[in-house]
Length: 457
Image 1 (tube, helix red, strand yellow):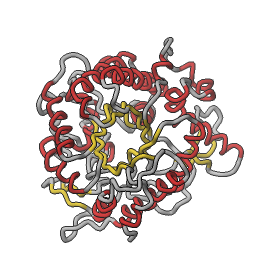
Image 2 (cartoon, rainbow, N blue to C red; image 1 turned 90 degrees about the vertical axis):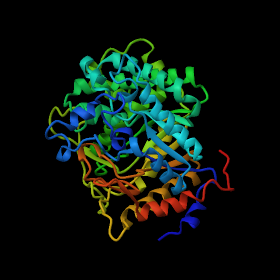
Image 3 (cartoon, rainbow, N blue to C red; image 1 turned 45 degrees about the vertical axis):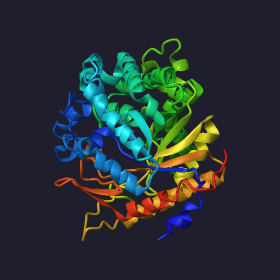
């Protein structure tokens, strides 16, 4: 096993090592203290949507165990904690009355982080849209973007003075395409027109949220977390190379281009622009405000080939087979080189600010044996991918930090509780936390920081 002390020498001394979670995945207490349902509460309770009809009612019971969980984070030696705030706890109906008890919870959480010397990196939206907003159409309605702006203001006015950084959205690819086109995530739509409306109004909500953050808490660095896909052609054929470019536009460009260039990608627009909602004057100006940082969530590459079917809808691609024989327990190809080529490609295409790897990790479902969890494959995954991050820093890319996904096993969306990504094992019957082998290694690495070999940008 690679020595974490030696490995640490590959990173600048001010590099941030953190862990990440999300509200719906760990908090539980879904009906406590004024919280009302989110779209994920409804989706989880529909037969056939989530494995085993698992739901977020209890999850990791973090809402009640937050102090001991923060002690666990402190004991792991990491310097940053990335968490999300549950909109249904703060503005339970999406619009209307503010729930003080919800704000109180995050007040205590952030104060607890500060008291332990851990930086607070918060995400305003990690998919738990207040269910009441579905009455207006949810993300397919322009009004939701303005509801999100107001929710942002409420958060920043109350908590902004203690946040180290804020992200507007986590992985809008999921809450747009996976949720409105592929039907795999809440609300479970399978409709291109709905997805295109959700796309633009999500981008608009991001921009309106940035405006609110800048107005209320101008000193808090604001960013956006994107699960950009490394769209690799299935072969060297011209058709597959063209397919990979279309896939880039569809899966990455529809977020990166408006945010970092103030426009939607050309081929995407010519294929689907007529089905987009009306783009009002100033929308793209609002969306493309300068950001202080951006977050990249990376797990696995996207390999595509040209879809030869006549009339195939843009991006007209089909999946191509993996190159690596190594897969995680969720079935995702392990291929660390794609992380390096993805970062290089994105910095080549866009004028991007500094980057944090805001999620990276692996699903392996080992259980506790004799009080320990031997998850060597997860540890190997971390070493491989962190090596790539170190290489990127060496090559001059502004990589400023890394958040492991996840602090602990949790509700893995449509997969329920059967898939485990944690550095810490959770026994869902007893809520006992057990730090895994990978967690101990990551803890030893994180404990080396901050240290003296700071690297100026």
